[in-house]
Length: 526
Image 1 (cartoon, rainbow, N blue to C red):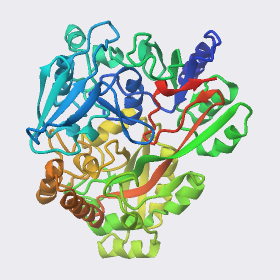
Image 2: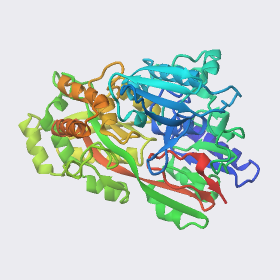
Image 3: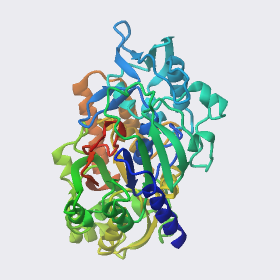
Image 4: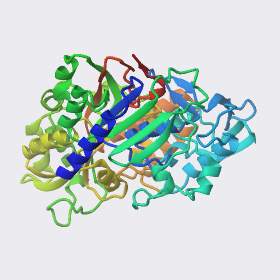
């Protein structure tokens, strides 16, 4: 522990040793990017770092509206409703000076569909990406897909030649522990160029003076020094001392202290993310409990009892210091398919929960392990600790195992956890994204984050139909029907919608992004 703390302090000292300049953004948050490979992990902080160096065809601005990136125009083909046509930005260079063309887009999308890719669910409806000419591509889908552009905002484009030359054509096997050249190196078209990368210690990027948008965006930050600092007190101390001047993952207990400090401000906004617990209901027996030959989580009455034992208002007031919104469904309010009625369905009733436990044959309770990250979500470990006590009130003894996200997430994707915390943001602003990853039965290219074991062929068919249903009224009816099953089966235990708080020096000009993905090219420095 002492060694890790010394490493953090050394990193901060190194950052402050840089020439004093208002153009250096000294940026910190709780965790690091899991990898720089553009297609290996679909995880928020990982995308955030990559967004500085790589670009997708389309991005979203801070209002959620589409903005052109490497594509300047996009529309369905007037001749074929199963084809989307994208006009590409001309004159763009990768960081090594090579030209960006349609060939790189075709290559990147083919790569993103590989088995090891964590992005493949997003483009599962695409059957072919073809280059019409150097600056026009066509995406062919397995039926008309009216919301295809929504799935592309985190799908980064790689340089085909660079990737081939560095033997990284195959997506990194992240879960298998593979390290490739693309894991710690980058060659994108983005506004910042990777200077150095020390995973979990420090990442340095410098301004791309040849960036195509150099004169279109403020681009006032000339250097980014990104430092992951897991310890909340150390993060805040770094901001208060001036060792960092931009801080995500602000501890809620320090908001007033930071906001009242001279030269510092805290900015807040609701986040497009919900926090919840998942339960393995699909196995006949599970490893994490003390019940032999049975799985208590397979009984919907137990799952509902567990949800009823969670006091979301207490978590909001005590753990989150008011900085959360209790949730009743695993969709944020930003998302098509969210309803206030369903989001209000979670209630706390310990006595009714005890009755359900007894009715299910678990009146004496049972014990189970809860797997929780300790460096990913706001107060993630503290939320899990609170849940331990709440579930104890209905006879469930919970053994908490809180570990870094890099070790936690593979437990979910590899089916090695029975009870776990997860948070989910929805960059497409549509329920299909949630269903594809968290509700559809787990297969090689879909349902990869569904650790519940829920697998319903009828529901799977409804989910798959959403990509090509152009009758939006009928599509929304299908979305509502799927949500009704998710709610009735208590697939997950929703906890709350996160509220974002970013702390920064007064001279750092940036507004809070609901995706929690600051894009440094927009920042102004005073």
